[in-house]
Length: 216
Image 1 (cartoon, one colour):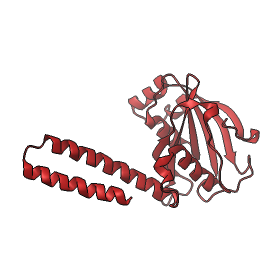
Image 2: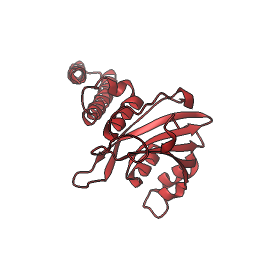
Image 3: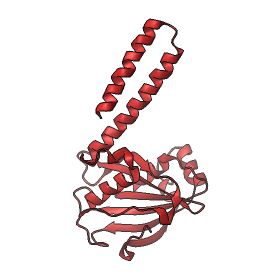
Image 4: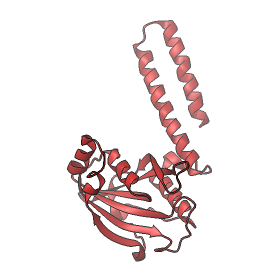
């Protein structure tokens, strides 16, 4: 898929119950697997054994999983559960009625646990035809390729922080989103407030958050 070399093709169907049977998951998450997913395919395995790339310090393999959906929405916790069970980095392709979305989560290595990763922030593209995707394997090693893919999928949200490492870029984006939510909440609060002194106080808080947002 995605024009990746034939040497990376794996094309193995994975039973979806692998990710919830005999594993402690909530009834809601199990329902998401059952009701939202039609089939899961392990499409590609990008590694030093399948492509001419050097291993990274954190990323040793990058897998491409295709999830065929029953509806054009998916509980993000499904991706998080798969990411937890697979000890490699994953690019997800969600398919519904011939259109695709690419999803990728920033997986950071757990402190003191080499080779184990904690799924973090997820980014995704818009729905589009597969031939419209322009994702590329840019980089000289697996770490660089993974970082590049996250930036490509995230688009402008991370492109503005291209000079920073991916961990810092994701951290800034998370802080930016948090500030935007806090600003929106204060603006709504100010609209409801009837006391002038409280309005002034809330407005100062909004200005402070906006200054912090501009500095990111």
